[in-house]
Image (cartoon, rainbow, N blue to C red; front, side, top):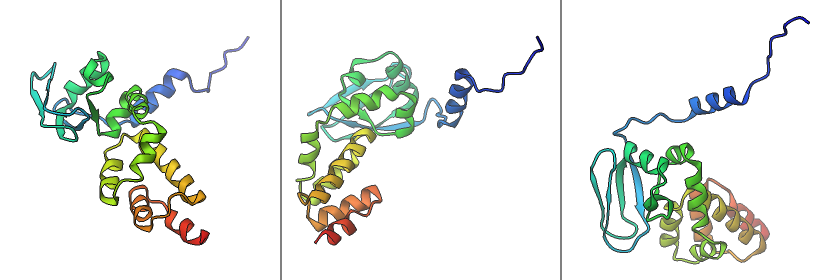
Length: 175
């Protein structure tokens, strides 16, 4: 039997190609992290030995990539039973399990409650959500606009601004 070159892409090749498209981080790159813990919180970087201090809930502190990467690879409790949320989508793409964890933090009711906050608080809350939760709240908001339960023009304008959508056009055409 003659040798025939295999031209199909193997799973290994596909994984390498996907990895090459991901952002490359330097060990000292700073990545913003949002505290979801009330009160002061200290995080010791296991690689750099830096002490990172969060003043209170909603405080954003930049943590070195090497410390976050090590914490993610070793499944550090403060990251996996989250006390803080990594705010960099490229980092989360390197550790997809984090997006699953972060998305599970918000129930549908929690996300719907965000949409009832004052417009300024709503905007701040949505911007601080992890990517998976942002996708969920976008879907919830679109459904609410379509069924008439979200009809605040100011809120819908903010959602359009955040998500680059045209929900306001849907709201005004439904009237």
